Image 1: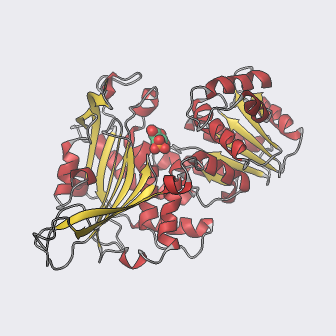
Image 2 (image 1 turned 60 degrees about the vertical axis):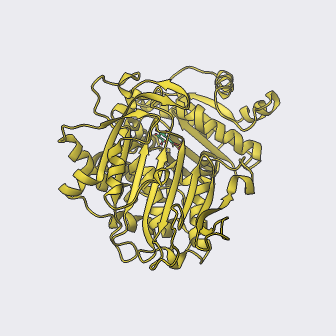
Length: 484
Ligand code: BG6
């Protein structure tokens, strides 16, 4: 099958940091269909050769499992071409049309890796130039809008130009092997299903912690913040994966229907829950992995009195028969104590205690997403000194490390998602109604913050965020995983 992959924003960060390395890995793994062409689009006047050279030099700066040899890169780069375009000029779309017409590929993929303000422009211009044919798919990167209204505007425009089955909205967390493993764990095994409900689960915690700060993206981050950047999309998708009902089959819409139901069941916010159950923080100066780092307000492109949150912790509930009353905690932040993304499922304690000691850290399942991908089952077992004390229990851990089991050079998130776009598989992409529902749910928080003069709590870089996040969970009688 031949394909043309058009990368709008072809010289931008996302392309050289994520998309090109992912395409190269797919090429190296032999999974990128032969006969493909990758057309980088940008305003500069690059020849095809100059564009290839640009990507080659950028490859030195990205993380690749193994550096490409010159011969390997040259074979990959033969697929790369460059098309100069100013995305607001209709004539330039004619130039793109001419480049595409040179070989009439079976599938044309338009990957809009530009500033979100250009999404609607690109879609409208593609339609005006007649480039939205039945063979075309469009890929949209997050953020899709900055609130419900702007998200709707983008989705409405996209809907006028493409049918929903042609639209691939990326949330790269869905492409992570660990997230697919979560689906496999829940829907490929019957073991956990009877336990996966309010009768047996005390609470669920989703943590996405980053060591990195905002790097050079200060200006972007100032208008985004952690709620829009991580919670509205990645964290809520994880919440859906952990909380959804088993879909009737593995088709895209069956999965997306169930995720949508979770989003619709999230408990509506009240003035009281907004005040108590949502914590925002902003990193101050501190030390991360032994290196002193500066405060968010001292980062490039950030206002000295910025109210933007770099940390969010919140408590919510899924109001349905399976989950009523079970708290779901979400926590994400930059410049935290480690790069660590995991989901903790805390089961309820035994109904009646017959052993005298009850050491902590048991009765829980941990789903590790990164840096390692795996499962930990924490149980209690009879401890070592059982001759002296017949009832001394000790926590033990069953570890399943998927990186060890399947090899750590597994298919990365973008590689997987790009191959899915090429093959037309929509399972791991977000439907517009899911996205709108997620915006609808976060919007009261944004509104609340607008009127809240307190602003975010400052936390020292290299910690787990403001202490109010611990106080929030402690109110329910629980604690975060690292505090147990
Ligand atoms: C992106 C956010 O969507 O996800 C970034 O815009 C964040 O701010 C990144 O750093 C985290 O992704 P990952 O895969 O490194 O956990």
